[in-house]
Image (cartoon, rainbow, N blue to C red; front, side, top):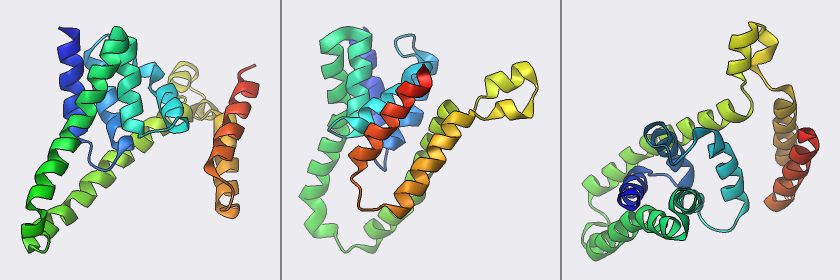
Length: 188
């Protein structure tokens, strides 16, 4: 039964996460709230690992979640569920693309999907920010305004953001490695 649940949940995520892998993140939090085979606390770690490994982030997160829930078979089932909607849609679109590629209704529909993609990616960005920089639980316990933000995480974010703005020629892998090293150092 768990394999069917894994397939169905990632099929839905793959079908509706328009805008790429980051749009999958809100679906992961929803899955974590409804099933015990995914813990919401590990989602930020999944994002970090998925971003730093080859392949699409949504597919990497689906594979990881499926593996954690039901082993290798679960990873395969989750990956198939995540990818299958895109494959089916691309096959369908490619069949009819030549007939509709300049149809104003199709162009307007695709244009209308942009805000939905932006909303899903914004929700994902907020979820990552909330999990990595905001420490609302600590604030609720202490009542001190300073406890809303994890200062070390905020400093790291600002440093990496500024470096990225000014050093555009540096490969992103350098930032990933740097952030991993700083994360390990801050952990101890």
